Image (cartoon, rainbow, N blue to C red; front, side, top):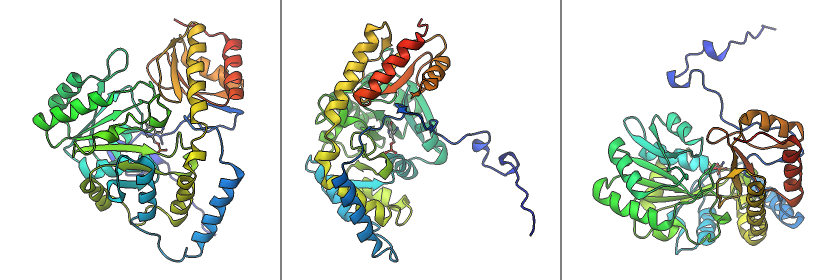
Length: 371
Ligand code: PMP
C-alpha cells in the first residue's frame, strides 16, 4: 500500500498566533499521589456508580437519536442545586467550565474586543482568549494577591475592557474576592462602562468557609454579571466534564447562539443528572478536604514556608530557590504537585489524610532550600 509520509506541525499553515504553541495541560503521570490538578480524591460510592451505569444504559436506548440540544432537565437540576431562586433559563451548561468560558468569549469577545484577567490567575484564560481571537490583558493583583475595586475600575477604563474575569477563590493563589467588592465593581461599571460583562469564576466556591456567600446573590441586581461553576472540583466529577453558568436569560441565549449543536452528549446529560440527584453524597467529603487544606497550610507555615492563605482545596507555598528541582524531587518520591504561580512557588492540592502524609514525608525528606 501507499506510504504515509508524516509532516511536522511547523510545515502546516497554522494561524500565526498558534505557531510554536503547545497544547495546555499539567503532566498526566501515573504516580501514587496526585496532588496537581485540584481534584476531589474520593471516587463515587458503588451505589452511585451503579446508578450512573444504569442511566448510561438507558440513554443508549435512544443513541440513534440526537440528545436534547437544550439540556432542559439537566439545566433545571443545576438551577435547583444552586438555589438563589434561579430557574432553568438562568442556567447554561457545557463540557466543563472551560467550554462555558469559551462560549462566553465567543459571544461577547472576538476581534477588537478585550478581556481582563487578574494575574496570577488560571492559566487557561489567555488560551480561551487566543482561541476566540479576543485580546487578553493580564492586570496584576495586589501584593497579597487580592483584587480591589479601584484597581479593577482603573484597568477596565485604561484597556477599554469588554469582559472581566474575577476568579474567586482564585487559582493558583486560593485568595477570595468578597461579594461586596464584586457588587461595588458591577455598580460602578454600570456608570463608566455599562456594556462590560463581569464573569465571576467560582470553580472552587464550595470549598470556602461560607459557600453561600456567592456572587449568585448579586444576579438579580446586575444584568451583565455571570457566575461560572463546575462539577469538576468539590463535586468530585472532573471526569464527567460538566461546567455551568448562572446569569440573566439573555446571556444564556447568547451562549445558545455560539454553542455547537448537541454539544452535551446524551450520556453526559444522563450521568450528570445522577450525580446531581446524589449531590449530598457527591459533596460529602468537602468538609474533610477543607479541613485537610487548612491543616496543610498550618503545617507548611510551621516548617517555615511562605504560604498564601487559601480558601480553596489547594495552596501556594514557597519560596524556593529552584522550584523545578523541588517539584522533580517530590515526583521522584511518587508525589506529583504543580509547578505554577509566581516565581519560586509551587501549588499542592488537598488530598486524603494518607496522601497528605505522603506529601509531608516527601517534602521533609528532600529538605529544600527556601529563600
Ligand atoms: N476555572 C478555574 C479557576 C479552574 O481552576 C478550573 C480547573 N482547573 C476551571 C475553571 C476549569 O474546570 P473544568 O473545565 O473542569 O470545569
